Length: 246
Ligand code: NAD
Image (cartoon, rainbow, N blue to C red; front, side, top):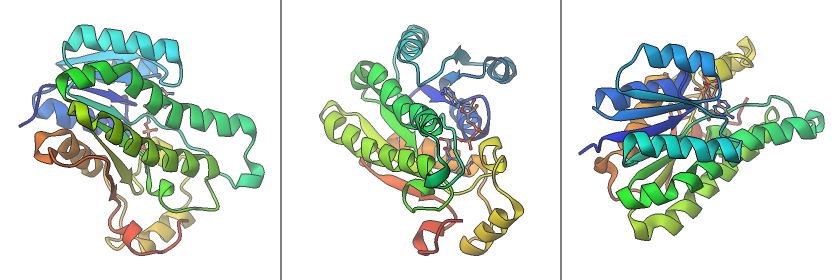
């Protein structure tokens, strides 16, 4: 059974937008959260049964206001998808502290802040949380030190949340996508990287936004009612091969 409300961060495009569309198709009302006000307004206008909320998930005051607006609109929060993310692409020797903080602020602080702000509502509704990490959080690369470290932390934060909130009936899981042709990925995936992924992934292709959203929707649904504290790679088999990340 699918309960009827959800909050998705980073919902203006990419995996967050695909997740929003899948939730809408399931009959949920969705609060779409993004810091890009223009892009969010455009996609929200083209959909029904959504509330767009402009919010930078790394800003505690903005997250508190978002949580209040979401709860007022939805009444109950049955699912929270912490999907907003940014990437750095460079080795540790070239990573400035500003870059490190910028990536941590959205990818890690954002998950912490949104989850904490919505915890009372999630407990009241016995809701589900899905945090979006990455295969970069499971396997080191020479290209993305801040990104990979932030995503590894998100996997651990997922386990913390599951351990602490299980007694309240809140399930918390994590999805680790492989490469998907979104704006975030294609800003940095050169042809060499694309070719390397093609060879290293057993299914020999990138995933689609919809394929990641399907896993998120499953974990948010009551079909996953005995699954919590897990991270699941949706990556065409990449993680199972032991081949290094490009
Ligand atoms: P995307 O760039 O298409 O979408 C990310 C969205 O998050 C954008 O709409 C952006 O405006 C929003 N956002 C960024 N920072 C924000 C902030 N501080 N507050 C609010 N909104 C913010 O990227 P995507 O590929 O769809 O990424 C979604 C998630 O999937 C991210 O967490 C990313 O790390 C993860 N992921 C993506 C890939 C991939 O190959 N695309 C692989 C593994 C993991």
